Image (cartoon, rainbow, N blue to C red; front, side, top):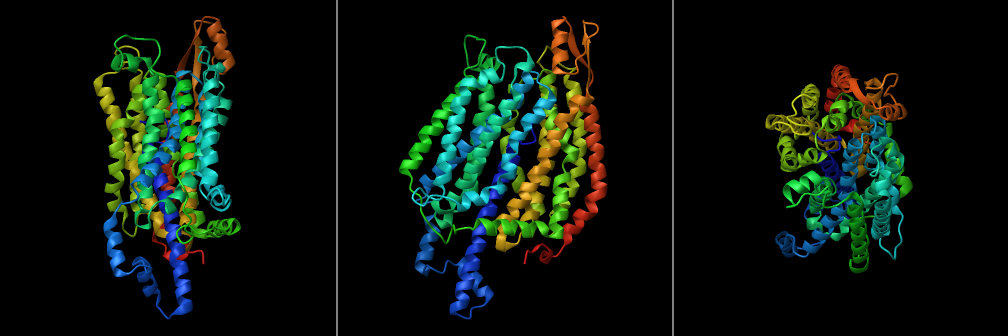
Length: 552
């Protein structure tokens, strides 16, 4: 049960799809150009052109056999480099995922958590500036390094500067939540994720020319493995080593009041790593130019293509589905983990639940893809929604149970942890069922002529469809939660100021009615109403002829 909807699997699968869409677009460009050139010199049929492309027309039979058996020969170092670049990209993502847990431990309001949730948006809207990254660069520097090197240096600068200020921003020296500077934290981590998203665009493009053509498919593997490792380092490993309880229990012979590392030292270390490794890549790794694999893209033309896609009636209808379909899951996905921390569960314990889920999240898409490979992939999407909505009731029950089953404060019985892990695993089955079927549908309907642009647009809308309900859910919950100040008559706990006054008067703020349960019920009802409203339209879109989705 993750704190944020942005669990590891969804983030990485999104990245895989974006890389696949990018490669798909480039392949379509190559096929199109070969057909155009061939028409000028011969009378070959369209089927012949496809056969020529797939057989690699610029090699003879002997060379083709050699290429087939070379495998990864000559690309081992490139694969390691790409994987490491994606690891660097995963570090700020992991740190961004750990901050809400730290904020919850500092007892900030859920409205402030909603503000911080905007840090996740850059990866959802990077399509807006991706054409600029693909088109503007210094020839002498390299097309991809023109963006990758500056962005990684800037990430290093942000981390080094932030390491000197992070304790003040989190109010470490104070027990008062109003000392936490959420706005500055949000701005800094939004910038970090913006830079990481820009680096992602550059590295995705560089993979096309860095790897041999026979091994370009390894780009998505590098992305998955690298981001998984980076997120793990920046989230799970950091939270474990930052926790005094975890370090005292598993790593130390003599207990101490602090963990092995602090957020400031972690940021400083990775800031240095970004500077050193970026300099080494800049100086030692040359960038190949291959216009056939990675052709020039016009900025204006790319935005024109986006505009044409967005005007299609089926695309508009599908975007409405993507923007509204996840409202029913907002409370369960964005609030449940934070509510467990509020109930007394250690943030480290919650983070460690991600470890057994990693292999599950890798295997699930492979299994589910067998059921989404047919002509109606969205059938799986619709069937998963009711089960995922009902799991919201189970999540609410787990949060309720957390307040009543603690053996001692912060200690829960074994069966409770088993219930959490089991429910989260079941939840992931339906999350991935929706995700994989959605991606299969996008691959099915994308116009091959502009496949990468088409898919990235739909994935961007889908990501936004998950972001805005989570932000709203976090923002609303405080307003429908009732708290009273016990031990100090005449005081309330509705704002940060009144909460502080209650404590100053010797009182304690106690939740008398938790709006989380109301919001959970409301989201579930909205989810079923949405299913009644849009399920017929979804089936109609799934059954449309492919010509309805073509731009030309």
